[in-house]
Image (cartoon, helix red, strand yellow):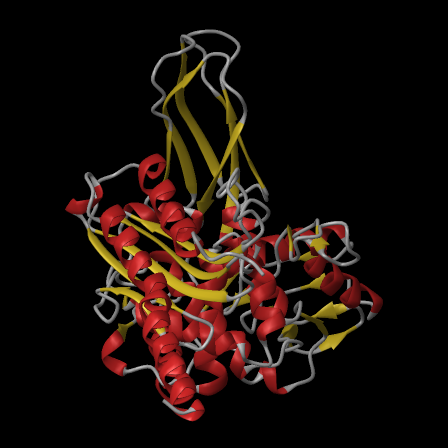
Length: 501
């Protein structure tokens, strides 16, 4: 055999020998994951899994192109669409208009607080590093006080008409029709309008009474003096079952607490949504006006009718403040899974790129983005809201994985990735993956509604490669303490055996 023939034979032999080894990784991964997902009690539920390598090739799939309820993984869509379509420094204005002449320190008519979908009239931090300059806004009233101060500097001391919260920048429909009735009481299903304050929720703090049989101690903030609280609770012996719950009165003017609180328990806080975000914001603004020495002689009202004060909005505003930039809107949606921010952002997409600030138009914008920009098959998703609270949302694991790969290469990646929780470090993953080699190596969005848990994102393998994954567990009856470690174990299995250089 000549030298050339010997070299050809050697090369062929190496290829044949290497082929099983090269394929061993994916086969091993499939065996590991199949064995894990098929063992009791996880074999009773529906699993959707898609894992892509750093070239976008499917390493592992189980029902990868089937539709699943994604829960809060739905937020990946609205944040990705917004990050791709809007600049990171995009802002909106909240304005104050006079529906009548202004003279001699008085507004001879109504004063209108007009919102354009700013969700950041709230108290929270917008970065992982809470010590960074400007990362946190400690006072939800600060923007309203800034508006009141501008009016005072103009010499305004009296409003002779009503004070009106105008949310007509968005559609009049405030509550999504797919959300469950009980959920509507709570912060995660707060009504969505063009105007909002404090996530459109009050903070209800409670702790046991001083003795068994005494009412629990319940209080709420912010309190503008027009919401009644009825306390029907009772303190029970330490170690007893607790049944405390909160409800709104049918007319929205009051809140009542019922049930039991165990003696010796720690203080806790719940967040209860209010039925009219425009009225809530107007009440907060009235308090800010009073602090600034501006009297309002009329009532505090709200509207979602865009024709009510259309003429007043044609005049220059008396006062105006800008929102925080879009990149700050994305952070709480991804990091702490804030539903109301997600729905506000979805309606903002509809207003900016569609025909109206509505759920319908926002979803239409998302659909165009997923199909036209990302290249996802339209049969692999069916969306109902922005947050994932609606059980009628459906997205395939493969669609999520492809969306995440698209965002990884997009110019808006820094703003998008900044909000994603990091394993054992931040956001909704801060307590997960602890004690595993993946601390700090997973950046992913969590999701949870009844019978559903999801996790989609990126994991850095020891060999330096980045895998993109989407895990969706549907139709299960397992508690969080069981299903969440299983999801995390699947991610650990993704990189097991991938050695570093």
